[in-house]
Image (cartoon, rainbow over all chains, first blue to last red; front, side):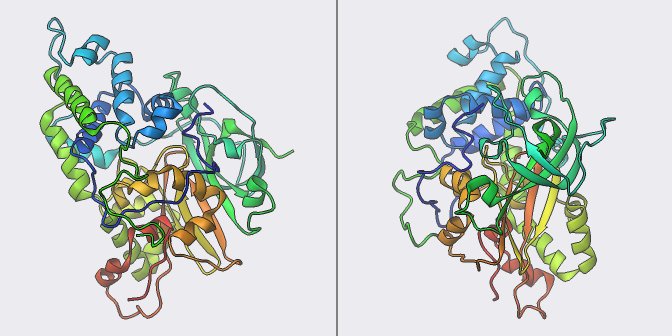
Amino acid sequence: MNGIHDMGGMQGFGPIDREENEPLWHAPWEPRMFAVGSALGAWGRWPIDASRGQIESMGAEAYLRSGYYAKRLPATIANAIRHGLITAREAETGQPDPAAPKATPPLTADMVDGAMKRGSPTARATERQAAFQIGDAVRTRNLNPETHTRLPRYARDKPGVIVLLHGAHVFPDTNALLQGENPQPLYTVKFRARDLWGEAANPRDTVCIDLWEDYLEPAR
Amino acid sequence: MSSHHPHGHDHDHDHDHDHSDVPSDLALRVKTLESLLVDKGLVDPAALDTIIEYYEHKVGPRNGARVVARAWSDPAYKTRLLTDATAAIAELGYSGRQGEHMVAVENTAATHNLVVCTLCSCYPLPVLGLPPAWYKSAPYRSRAVIEPRAVLHEFGLDLPEDVEVRVWDSTAEIRYLVLPERPSGTDAMTEEQLAALVTRDSMIGTAVVSAP
């Protein structure tokens, strides 16, 4: 989706504002939101790709207005409704449907440490052979899906070189839509800054981007 | 702190906190959602507290600093880190969420690495903890790829023209840790002393590690 979230190369946002001795949280609700999102994830009803996809579809104005943790609130509610954990009416009233049975949380306090330390690896064993090897010249495809993708706009239809192979990883474009993990080779592709941004860029500078095989074609 | 934009914490500047939404409204909405989920048995309130505690106390840039100091002190460890960072970092006990697949990138006299996530705010949580607001901000995400040298200048770092600035845009579930150059004059230092020199920003690539 060509949304506001795809910020690489945009101009006009101004200087980078840093806060001295920045606290971990800026409001008491931020850790609560972060933890709620993490704990709901343990239900395994939707992957991180769907969470990102939901945040991306919140609209440009809301996206820019909301901070990192605030963006998660509507996205978490939307996914919890869509994937059957809560109803829209419950979300609106904040009251559980009295007819619904009480669930048992899949993640209890004693499980947290282990769950965080395991994480959710996205590497998958697959039969699919990598089409490219380190050193191969490739070109990114000119793709403009209206749904979630991880091929940034600034790197579409650009020449690059494969510099790292990561094996097969879950493909976010299909996984975000719960259309399957579609694991496929993931590469790091190195681009010359000049190929991305033109002659004003330093001739030595480069940008490395992690890209799945479906985003790539052999160099022309 | 940038010398270009000094300010306190008391105005709603362009941090990544929520400048336009009414904070009390957000607080209420989050509380409402949390109560609903707890009442429905979907989340365990004690688990929420434990998750918060985990991110407040068990992960943070001190973890990454220990990885860097070990790599500076132990050439065999450095080789393992640069070959299979996930396994090498796990040797020190750090692993998991948003660090499932790690790659360490080494700064040298010829190459300076800088990490960003232009599409969201991906960050290697097990080694660096939760990201600072500037890392998640639109200015950093938009500019790091198109004008990394201007970004580094704002952080007080001006690199020679003949050094390659290599930006890593974290678009997949690979998370990058910059291995900064060991400063000169630190030969006699212990691993613990070295770790104390390593800053968060030096492991993102917006700073270098200075000699003590």
